Length: 372
Image (cartoon, rainbow, N blue to C red; front, side):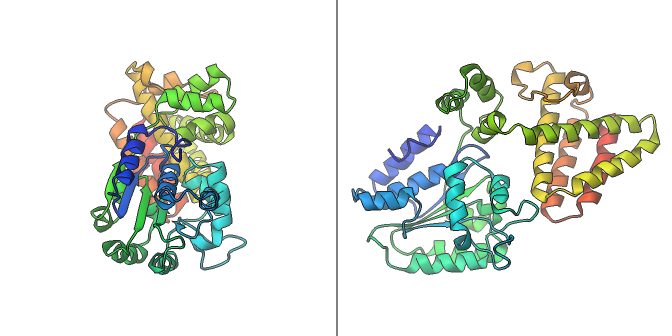
């Protein structure tokens, strides 16, 4: 029953149920969960299953459903905002966290930062979080059963915090479970990964996404088209139905970027427009900048597929007057690898707190060359 609200991942859900029933739950688990695949709701459902442990208590079930049970703990990225001026930590944002899970269980890090009002900052899971968790996991269980910690977006653990947590999972207290949820396995310490049982979540099938959207009241033909174009990402499907404005803005930015880049070929003075474009983007928050670059990766990927007539695989549907078919002719096997590398390097630089104006200007000049 506890897994019923988790969309997809049926084989993994069965495996987790079986391991629990047979009493062979690994103390440290890692869910590698690409955006929109449901790592967070799955980890919470599994945590509830382990803690309840057939206690058959309505009080226990209620506390778990409200995410207020004293044996269920969470770590997640935070940053100072208008209310919490310093020493931000997970325990200070539990109210917002419960609201986030209740409203956007398939949301990503950007959605969470918007919830906190820190979309222009880089969040982290710091040493205060881990030290607090070490104390809590060392205490006696509230109901005499298991204690579970869910560490969401675990790649945001800073180095010192990760090492402190490593010591805890190397010698875990009795009846404790640590569930790490991350989008990219390579961003975690190898020493943490090596001590975890790894489960890789798959993209959610279009049929399951379509069924979910229909149950939410979306008209069947729209649900079907949205599901097909979501690439197995339930978050993207939900955003496409309910929140098209941000993606439309990204597309307009991309369109202006593209038009200016092509003009530079015939008029070098258009470089000034690229400078202005870069300044505009650099004034947004870093999470917005990263999201735009990820959006650009998606557009270029779809352009390549379109250029090679792989139309059944094309998922990008323009919301502006961008001439996608004409643009696609400029994306091919000769330049796609370099384009991808430049975009990914820009994402890495933004994450490393590089100067966004310089990053986007440099990227613009390189892409101007590559697409021509």
